[in-house]
Amino acid sequence: MTTSGLSFPDGFVWGTATASYQIEGAHDEDGRSPSIWDTFSRTPGKVLGGDTGDVACDHYHRYPEDVALMRELGLDAYRFSVAWPRIVPGGTGAVNAKGVDFYSRLVDTLLENGIRPVVTLYHWDLPEVLDQRGGWLNRDSAQWYAEYAAATVAALGDRVTNWTTFNEPWCSSILSYAIGAHAPGHRDGAESLVAAHHLMLAHGTAVPVIREHAPDAEVSITLNPTQVWGPDDGDEADADAVRRADNALNGIFFGPVFHGAYPAGFLDDTAYLTDHSFIHDGDLETISAPLDNLGVNNYFPTRVRAARDGEEGNTPIPGGQRVVEVAPRPPLTGIGWEQSPESHRLIIERSARESGLPLYITENGSAWPDTVDADGQVHDADRVAYLQGHLGAVSDAIKNGVDVRGYFAWSLLDNFEWAYGYSQRFGIVHVDYDTQVRTIKDSGREYARIIAEHRG
Image (cartoon, rainbow, N blue to C red; front, side):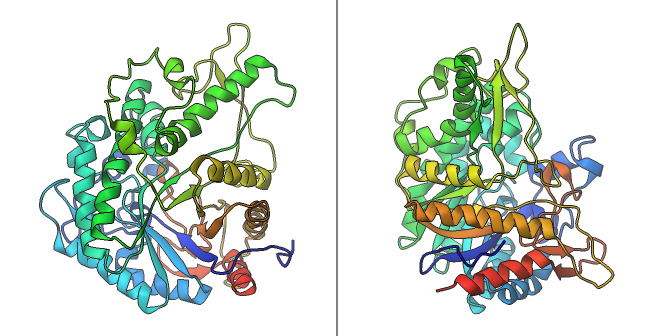
């Protein structure tokens, strides 16, 4: 596929993204305390192969090399997350100067190389000491998070102009508390609703704190909405299954953050789980604090149908007891996710309608079983095709009037892929986990070519 017909506006930001626990390593160095992912990955059966992020990509020590790779690729920006256990090891209270210094050096190195730092304050690595106090089930978590945000932005806000409060709060609530696939690994639908609400409350509480410490910065949240499709020949029951699934996957965050209310029917659909007493007066006003842009992470669509003839639903999402998730349609990526540039375009357009904000595609990518060939290169043609197709969808959304201002490929590096351990490779740069040697893949070269072709 050629990309010469794609269209991106002047000033379009080209970047890549990573997350702290997935790449940093140095899990017990310079005052960092354990996170819930340190605990979860050490729990037998939780992570494939018993893998942990103890070393990961050793980015904590190798960040100058990684920034040099970014410069070689021609990136405008680098989206990374800060590890709360490095900044405030006790969860609350004293700030760890060595933790702050690491991120300060990283920011300075990026700026010296002409790369904009785009900082996410929370990408799932809650300090373990706070989980022992209830974690996101404790309403006090909103203030814990605001305190941590204040410390981080105060230290870096003189140089960082793009701040994101949370990455994919759906994953740190529903996936983590109802489905149990992510830390802390609970399986309780009611808890997942409490966690989701408190995550949004923390987001809204922190927005004015960030603005106070970095008044000229843009403030954002990154969601991971998914296009929900029912059967091609679906009936009213299937349409209701789509509604229920969409509310639990998308509306649960679109509604409170951008409309100051949970979506229609959602509270009724989840009344079998809870009386929703965790929602206090004034919460939704706090949660819907004005933002400057929205980050959209998207990889694949979701397909559902209604349960039939006494059949049980197969998904633990809140309100989804009569919803059956059906198999994705080929072609699939190496991890088994459906490839659908059309759904990518549709969810970008919906995200713009829901938020009324400029968008950044803050994550998009694909996993494949990459190997270094005899020529010393990684020939990942499938990822090249995925990248081209999904950038085509971004271009189409822009042509349809959506204000998309940047694209961040997931991921810069192969890394610790959460419950999949090191079995899945998403990077445009290959990492040999034994030697830590980095090799730019064909997809990385293609991304660099696209950037050079379409830069203003």
